[in-house]
Image (tube, rainbow, N blue to C red; front, top):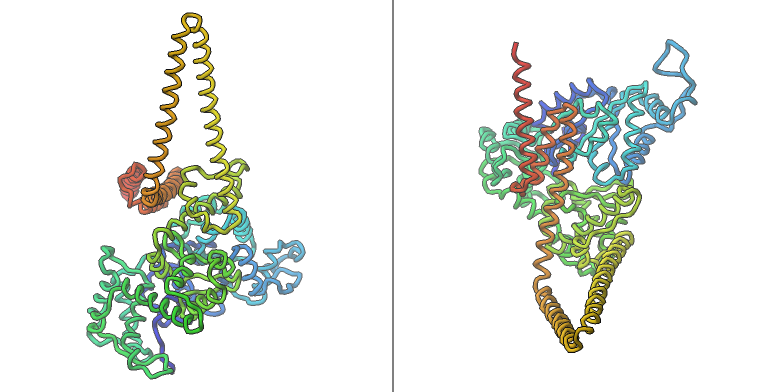
Length: 612
């Protein structure tokens, strides 16, 4: 019997891994029960809680092969096209007979009268004869990357699936910070959030389940746990991963990375060349010698970057480690989470990077399981947000500013394309252009450059119009003075002469003072420019966070108005978490007040319900 290596590093667990998937029994039981109670199930949680593994391994492992046809769908470059492709791969285009397999008691409608989607699901069932489960993983991508047209088309598809005579289950998995984006979706599909499961991070009790599960594998695993050390090992691992964090939980991917690193630390120096795995025993003593999870992730990425740079240098390409970090940077959002990108988009983001170098770096990181590749759309993405956070820490102030500049431009272009300003393209304000213009030379996208140029032209025209208005005022003022001078000249020529000299003298002085002020401003501005840019960026980051919190607050208000207090409380909490760095802001206090009042109201109602 082949032995098992029980760790997945940053890969998700699949159905074949059910023998080594530990620590989620309660969640698996709850999910298995819920899936029979509804056509739509929402699985949500923070990044790193193991939502994908819970579905692909935990839930899938509870079904017999004849009871489970899972069709997994990721957005790719468009969720609707990806769904069509996934259905086709499972038999949607197969020829189907002209009778109703689901209804033998009456004459069925001809196949020709079925909608294309109904035909697809009927064909899939007739080919497989298994219940169909559509699983939409990382569903937040529809709202983070997709546009309004794509979202509306998908909502219409979901509505049609729910109307089918043939039962089809849909499971959506997404990060909880994007739940607020579902408001419009839920209005069209009211049952969307009626059955939901929040996946919590790993508590110490969950970690204990994992360690005990590994210990129970015994001779069937390459890894054994020293007898009697299960308790101390659990404590040591939990605190090594938690480090200085005051939280009572840890992230599942961090646990997997730590255990994988522990195994390799035990075996790398003694493992024969060409052998992938050998037996080893985990002891508490070995764990105490390990660094914390931050050190492990940082060191691991540093090693991979150094290795990539070394290999490229040996092949004749002088690519520094900084160049490698620059290549990885576009795969991470401004907030430090992973960002799917196609190879074409990466080339567009990195115009100065030679294509062979880019391809070589991406290939090495893919081969080392740090990048995942989806053929549909030729999409690459980091294996996990845990890596994205480490890459984000390597960015300089200028890199962060450029990313924020690109975010501003992309958002405005999307708003203009959606016709948010009554169909009229909206340009950027002078305040935002003051941030963007220093980085204009680094922007290569034609649409972004067009927006920059149009905004600058509009700002310049505003300046010219303001100057023309000021000159017109001065002209009228001079005309008035001239008129008064003519009137006064009747009284005395000498008095008029004195007034004219006075006006001329003061006018010259004003011009001189203006020139001096301009010179001083130019001199001061040169020394303060960098500091002001940094301060403006900080202000913009705060403004962005406040805007997102306001949006979440409005979602919470809407759910409260509709009587969904539990969900409203969750949204208010997310809003507060997103601006906890600005707890002195009036918006934070306002949302906090709403949350507290709603908590009291909910508690009182619960108490009243419990009374006999």
